[in-house]
Amino acid sequence: MHELSNRVPGQEVIAKLLDVQGQEADRSLLGRIFGADPLSAEARPWYRGALGEVAVGRLLAGLGPEWTVLHAIPVGAGTSDIDHVLIGPAGVFTVNTKNHSDQSVWVAGRTLMVAGQRQRHIPNAAHEAARAGKLLSAASGIPVEVSGVVVIIAPKNLTIKKAPEGAQVLSDRQILRWLRGLRPALSADQVFRIASAARLPRTWHRNPGLQADPVELQDRFDALRDHVDRARRRRMLWVLAAFVGLFSMIFLSPLF
Image 1 (cartoon, rainbow, N blue to C red):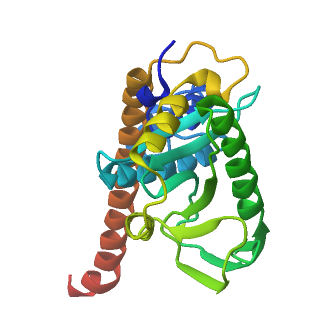
Image 2 (image 1 turned 180 degrees about the vertical axis):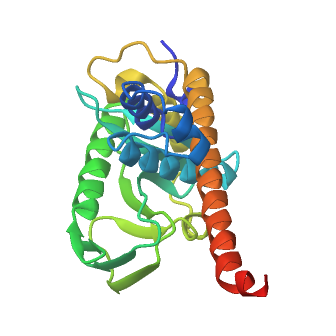
């Protein structure tokens, strides 16, 4: 059975995205010409979530060799997963990524609001960390304390009215600096034992099965992302062309 270290950021979300998007009919020729969004309405939130996990995964790759960073860890008995698990000298962390780009985020204690709407991100992250601590303690044979972290992707602003309770809340721009600023909490032997247990699928899931090929999933996601980006650029070109045409009609027509 493959170790979990082979998994790519956002692997579970990407698999779901590709499954949902695969049920969507191809765009028409006219749709492709005018840059119609290739994503279905159902696939769009999965795509947004995948972008967030991939972005944070790229950031976490900069932690250095003293850290073990695992992504998209299947946990429990169903299809739930943990976005990222970090194990290093500063401790063990579960990271829950939330893509709330260009939205206002407000935090006070266990309350987190996005654009004025209350979310359960902090309680969920605290529960996720507690469960991870129990599983890693049982698998490694040593007590493991896990801290939950919620990472908000590119928020318009992140206001901490009162320190979060149960989990840390950070923006993607803060996460690396915060982790690097923590004091050592684990010995090298503890890090090794916990990381060794964390890499095993059976540590986390009751019935670990065969994993999808992460390279294939990543390639398919990259191809879809390229289609989405090209469609967006095409739409922008059409908008620009329409603006230029309108400008010409209004300001240049009287000259002829």
